[in-house]
Image 1 (cartoon, one colour):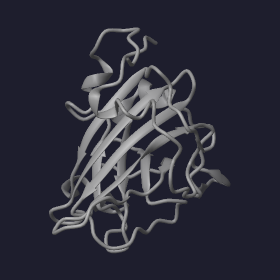
Image 2 (image 1 turned 180 degrees about the vertical axis):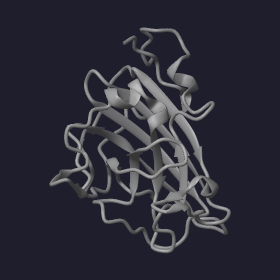
Image 3 (image 1 turned 60 degrees about the vertical axis):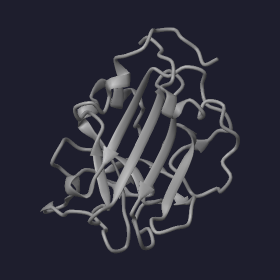
Image 4 (image 1 turned 90 degrees about the vertical axis):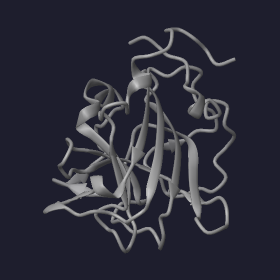
Length: 204
């Protein structure tokens, strides 16, 4: 698969320094990202998109999330830049963290395949902004067991590139356990960068 340059919102990640706060995460945290990505995904997550195990379960009213991912499937590395706005209360999930990529189509629930460090407060003010950024490399684990094994077992980032519409991203809180916000990776416009800029480009 051809390699694409990073879009601007992810531009700082490939040269990002070490992750400042170590949470239990899905894969191996790495101090530097790849110079090129084979795909990028940029999503706006909203509470209306949240789906629970038994159907619609809207998330926190007024909340919003910006989830930006850069994938190098050849190295099995994913870099992330996540911002949550209007999300209140503590995180809660049976997984190792409460911020994930799940495998499921639009309108469906499904198991987590990757867990990311939860966004932490970045500003103070009337609306608390929470952020998390860094890079992880497989193999991935989630801390959730299904059929006797972790739901991240055997998962690779190439699976996202093969079927982005079959995956979504979200975060969970104690008040909104099914999800506080959600976005589908394959939604219209979400993977626009996956098909755009010139192949083979590198970060300056």
